[in-house]
Every structure is written in C-alpha cells, then in structure tokens.
Image (cartoon, rainbow, N blue to C red; front, top):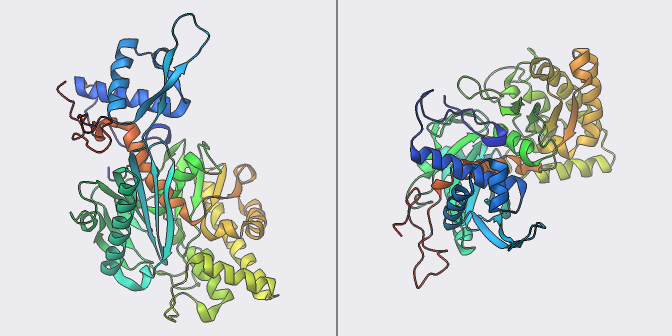
Length: 448
C-alpha cells in the first residue's frame, strides 16, 4: 500500500508491519506501551503515574518504567505534586513536553511556498508563506527553493533548541508516498519528480526523515484534528487553490484508495464543452471553480499565465478582487456567483458518493465564503439526493492557505506519538546535566 498518513485518532491505513497472528517481540510491546502512555497524556492532560496506570490498564511498575524512558526522550515532564484528595504524599504530575522535538511541514503550490513547524505539544514555532512562481519555475528551481526554505527552518529551530523529528512536504498532485515521488502535478508541470530523494541531500536537513504527500489529504487531516470540523468522522475538504483538490475523511479515516490517489476531485469532468485544464483534458471541475478561473473572469489582464514579472501571493490576488468589488465592479459578484453555482454542482457528486456531513472549504473559498456558500448550498439542495444533501453543509476553514503545511507538520507529530522511540534518549553528562543538546541515537537505551 503506497498511501499511509494518519494514525491514532486519525486512523492509520498502514499495517503494523507484522503478519497477522505473529507474536509481538519485547521491543514491539514496549514501543506500543510507550505510545499508549504518551498519547494518553497528550490527549487527557496532566495526571499522576497511578492515574495513568488506572486509565490505561498498565500496572504501576510498568508505567513508572515507561515514564522514565519518555522523560529521557524529552517527551514527558514532571510538573509538580498532584493533589487528588488522597491520604499520603501526593504523586508528581506528568505532562506532555516535546518542547525540544520539532515537526516541520512544507507546502509548495502554484504561487507560494509555506513552512509551518510545531513542537510535539503542537506549540507553533514557525508559520510563514512566501510568494514563489512554482508554475513557471520548473521542478529543479522549485526544489532549490524548497531546499532553501527547509535549511532556513532547520536553522531557526536549532536556534530555539529544537531538533527535528521529521519533515513532510505537501504537493498538489498524485504522490507515490512510498518513494516520495510526485507522479504528476499538472498545475506545477511536474512529472515523475523524486522530491524526497532530492531534498534528502546531506546539506539540507541531515538525518531528518522526509516524506511527501498530497496537499488536500494533509489539509483534510488538519481540519479533522484541529480545524472547524474537528472530530467529524465524515467530511470532505476542498483546497480552493489554483487547482482544486479534495481530501476525504470517511468513518474517521483518511480515504487513500488503492494507489493513494483518491480525492483528485478537481479533474472530474463537469463540462464537456468547457475550458482546457492544466492536466490536458477539457472541462475539469477546477476550470470552473479554481482560483485561476475566478481571476480570469474578474481580472483577465492579470490572469494566471499572463506574465508581468510579478509573483502574486493568492492573498494579494484576492485583495485586488475585493477592492474591485468594493469599487462597484459588477463582474466580481457575477464571477463569485458563477463559482458558487459550479461548486454546488460538483459537490453534489461528492455528497452522493461519500455522504459527508460537512464539506470544508479551504483556500480562497474560505475567504469568499459569505458570498459563495449560500449559492453552493442552494445548488446542492436542488441537485443532490434529498436526504444526504439536506444533512450536509458547507463550512469555511479557519486555517486559510496554511492548512496543508499545518497538516504536514501534524503527520510528523502523529508519527512521534505512534512510535516515541524515533526520538533519541538524552545523554546526561556532568557538563550537560539536563541532556538537552546531546542525544543518543533513537531506539537505543543507555547502559546505566
């Protein structure tokens, strides 16, 4: 299986790597128990060792040993006595730490590159986006720019005393996640680009694992875990970029498909006599509702592909459109209404196929949601199967254009929660009593 994001609450479509019925060895059992304790503290907040034991079903001796290792890996910390009303000396409370362990999400899209980093406790360390013409730059120059972005982020995190646990790169296209290769990203003009291999060069982020995934899938995970639809087990996320991608959460699990290519909704044909799409086909949905379509209708002189030497971030393009609307340009309202109609028509197919409760609108859809959603909802009600359409609503994301990079960082955090042994144990020495800067290799226990 090529596709494998998520885990824990998100649902991990990957197997454990062991054949069914095979006995678990001691290391596997310990790794599973470390994950159980770390995830429990992460999800339920500070608590004593005895309470962790009672709530997880592990015995107290085992919990004490597991906590000791998680403290040594810098993932859990003791924060002081916890008074629970019991007679006797109160136990030390445990809390999620992870302040020295970072997760980096990088996104490359048609007209920008974004970087988003957190520590394991999801405290935001980096959140930036810069305009970049990836569409016109080609894969080599784009990968050079990505490498520079990663180097800068690694340097910034090192200054914070943070060591990276991993990097996930979000790309708008079909991704072979097993190799980190972009099979095809039509709006970028990328075909068979080995992104993970190119970014794994020793001068970029030495010894940091790099994975690559689809931007819409990563954004859907972000919405499911931290966004407006947190915990909604059945949802569809629509990117609202130049290209329109979709991420589908079904039954609390990210839908990948046989090859990990599920969710390429922007290339569903909706108008056989329509415009030619970047993928080469005619009348794809994104030619009706993508940001490029809106810009073409409102500001044809500044349309995508009409080069004037200026790289425009999507927020800048939207600001110009809103200014024109405020100045009384009727084309803006008509274009937004047209996008809303086609958004509702295309979403009817998604509702009939996946029966979601929520369709989360990201990117520029969210920015113009007040005008787009009523039109799209009415079209969905008109064309959809009555029952499922009536129970599905559009909502605007509050993660903006950063949903994919946020989801990419979240995948790394989830990997740490699922296997804490990927984080090295701090080496305690007389000159380094806290063990913050010197770590032993992951999966290695100290002799003493």
